[in-house]
Image (cartoon, rainbow, N blue to C red; front, side, top):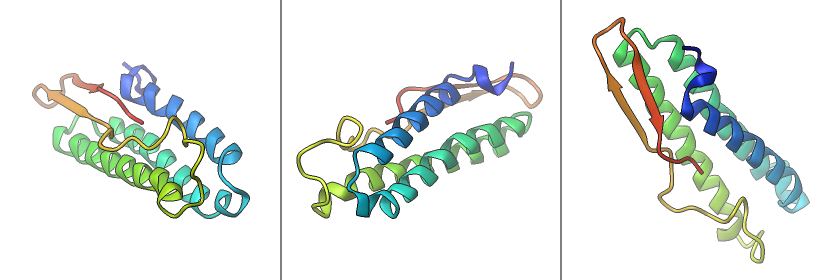
Amino acid sequence: MIYKNLQIWMISKARLLNIERMTLTQLPKFEMFEEGAQIRKSIKLAKFTILEGYGWRQYEQEFTRFLTYTRASCDETGDHLVAPFETGSLSDQPLDEGPHENQFVALTVSAAPVGSHVELNAVHMY
């Protein structure tokens, strides 16, 4: 199995493209390069961390550690998506379907003994 077949990687890729497009079209110009850049960086990091973790999949603890980093990047993205509403930069149109409080990546990892296949499923991600 390759990383591109992981459900969570496919979801993170789709969300990255969606959020990238949104930050370049829906944010006010003054937010596009500050807050927008932070949003893009954090969502990209989530996708890339899944890939890096997959490279360590034979070591259950390492793989789980990278998934924890992925969760943290998604938490950061979520906070950045809410910030324009909190600061008043945006008030009338939702960013990427609006802020999703408590809808971060929900990961379940069922790992068999080292060397066997590690299953990763994404419940939802922004």
